[in-house]
Amino acid sequence: MIVRIVNMHFKETSVGKFQNMFDAYKEQIRNQPGCSFLELYQDKDDAQRFYTYSYWENEEALNKYRKSTLFEEVWPQTKAMFDEKPQANSVVKIHSLL
Image (cartoon, rainbow, N blue to C red; front, top):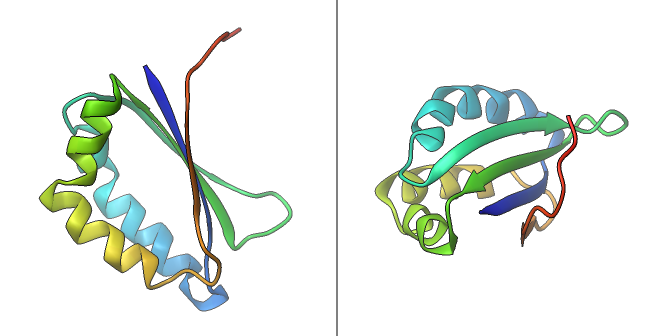
């Protein structure tokens, strides 16, 4: 499993627009083949900074999503709202304690 963490900082005027857009697309993203988990976080000290965490079956599933029609629709709209370059990392979960 791959955990994809994306750190995004938005223009102040785009925060609400991004939240509405995420809400509109979250089910479609979560239901992509190979995606088993999706969460959105907002930084407690910086209301313009958001993080997405998504779990992917493998890198192939993540890459298929990144080449999908849905991603081609969502990502350009999201990118237009940034005021900093986003940072995306793929990591492998080692431990999880609940």
